[in-house]
Image 1 (cartoon, rainbow, N blue to C red):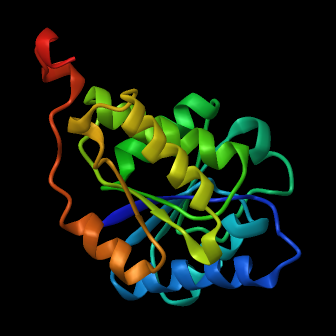
Image 2 (image 1 turned 45 degrees about the horizontal axis):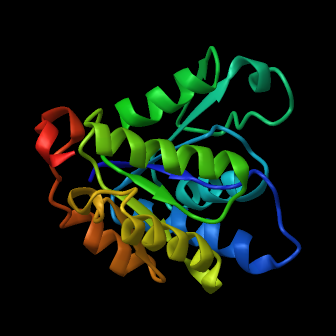
Image 3 (image 1 turned 30 degrees about the vertical axis):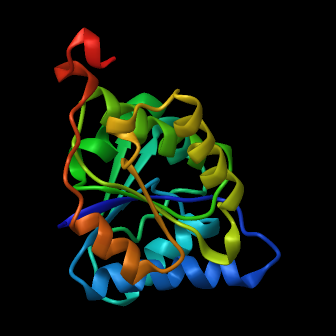
Length: 193
């Protein structure tokens, strides 16, 4: 993996562990020679991931919508800052520029990005790994809900392994690197659906 799209919150929670985690994720990716593609902001976990990666000498590509680029939230310290027309173009750029998707804690926007990456993988728009780092049990309920969707049958068994989760970054990156793409819906027969 040469680059990962990192999905995370633009907020700064009161608990300092989240910002510390985000900085360490950015730094560790840089140490491993993995570039960061992210939302282009300088605030919250987004900004912490970017600053961690940059401080460790890593590549950081920010992708920010025009509506946010003119405000004070754009991170002009990025290796490259791409300004796009809107959120759809931003998510397409994440997919085009990255070899995988890494989600750390965040809110509604982070969930939108994560589920779209999974959905696009199911359909066959990309065949890259989708990872969720679950520090402090932050995503325990989300992972339980994903298992529930599998058990009920709303996620096909062929796609049950798309979402890769771990409590530690080294384990998660190892599992993402070893990810074997599944059969996408676009290549499945009607009898398999």
